[in-house]
Length: 243
Image (cartoon, rainbow, N blue to C red):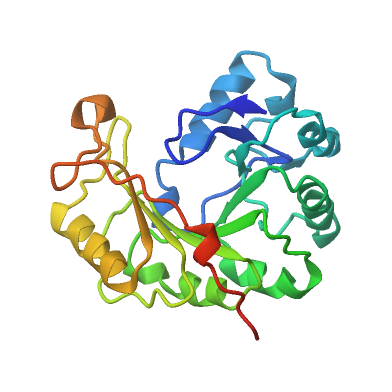
């Protein structure tokens, strides 16, 4: 585990590492770049670079945290990758189930596999489930997510590389938006961001603006409409969804 500079979480925990590219949002994957860097540094966990690996020993780590944490699960991978066995995913869920004092934020691009496994997973209230939605070609991921039994459902529209008009935000609790960063970032149009912010406001969905991105993300910052948007799901207002 590691402390995180990601604005919407506190730390990261990686029971799996490695992945492969699935859609346009993966083009400049930060996890792939970081994995190669860690491999070059001689970090044993990343000795295979960005090849998918399962780490049984990591399953015990959350039990050792003494105070409640907000945790991004698998920042260096995708837990619902087709080559991660359901049995291992269930082990990760067991760890999260048995540590209700922590909030676990899980994010995937493989929403179809997520829904396939949904009925075999124990969705305790401390597990937040999200899908990445970088442009309108992958909005079907929202529909898959909506059908799961996760108590908190969220969207990560990062890197936002196209408009997302008229999203169906029913039963979605939180939307994160961010621009791409790095050496050759694809531009994010301010109108795309404003439109998503208005959609969230209209649907009473928490909106979090992470960054404008660019080659110098610190310089571009995260101010929108003259302020920062740090909204989080209002847990006391969430309703149980029956299927």
